[in-house]
Length: 427
Ligand code: SDX
Figure 1: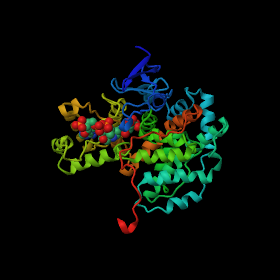
Figure 2: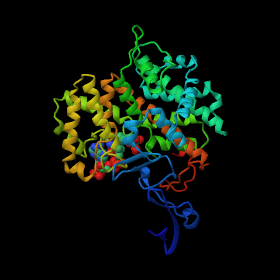
Figure 3: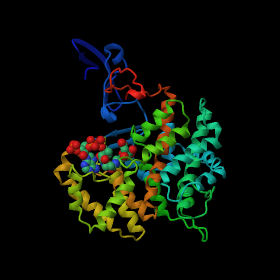
Figure 4: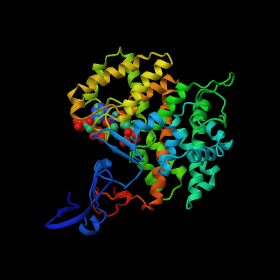
């Protein structure tokens, strides 16, 4: 392929360099476009626009491929521990035992949250959506950890990274337990990262906690599958907020708010609410399929479709198998799993979905596992955020290390042209 691109603007031809990535993706570098031509591009939703060069995650939407730092999501979900994957995403390679032990030790050493943060938590109404609480408390953490604001040195960056990896799970567990009216604690220093998250969330105050390996394994897999996904809406938010040199915690807080949206991470909650609505309506999936295809109806088949995947989302395939396994191991039969499978079968045979290449995405089956673990619907997206945290950190770190400029898109103005000011009594 020619490594140049030509563009005619008016009667002038302009030439631009093309860049090629390690997986042979090609981009036209238009960083000199406005200077050369005095015109800009416009691309609502950035469907055709790359924001950066990144070495963290590769996905091929046509082939349904997802890799973190070159490792396939299938291998990582099957063989890795979530903390290994977090280390891989953030530092670029899988850690050996010594590095993994040090990483976990440094996280444990920071796994305390100032007790005053509980006062902020308790000031929220119990009905508050957990994502709003999580975003607020993540931002509030800066006030109790001022050292995480200016991250100029590698050491400052590392300390902020282990701090947020240590403290976010505690806040997630506190948000979950407060919603259930349970006492808040800090888990168990002797446990591994995911084991401790599980214990912090599920420990009962009045009986010995017995770890359920099926639950730990399911949460480990789900966290890995959600850990990064290149330049999605919330990750792009984290990068652009961080590009102003706002701190890591403030940038992650912004990412949590972006993930909350029902078209993005909030879809996992919306999927379960949709499946429960279909069940309560008598299980007539065909009626809801018709609604999803009806342009006059705002209903969409939640958990279906993706900006990049025009094939099966590889994560959805893995989660679908895990959902069957977890329900079987926990001895649970959940009718909405069958409804989900019926919807998938019908959609994959329906020209509306086939023509638009709408397949199940990561959110379609994940809620069925969270529900089986007795996690409330409103906490599903919080679990997504917990998984996505290492990806946000890695992307933020890459953006700062690459010294990327502050993000500031242009626009095309379509408003009023110049007007003289009109005094109030003349309007
Ligand atoms: C995540 O980007 C990421 O990587 C995100 C994520 C991650 O890991 O970070 O993968 C996580 O956010 C997964 C997506 C979760 N969202 C949902 O499940 C919500 C339902 N899906 C849609 O809203 C939609 O598919 C999006 C938002 C996911 C993608 O939207 P696009 O790329 O902007 O596509 P579009 O809205 O332009 O749709 C194209 C066509 C339209 O029909 P036409 O105008 O061509 O006739 O497909 C239709 C849409 O109406 N369509 C759907 C549909 N999704 C798209 N029709 C019915 N049901 C749907 N779910």
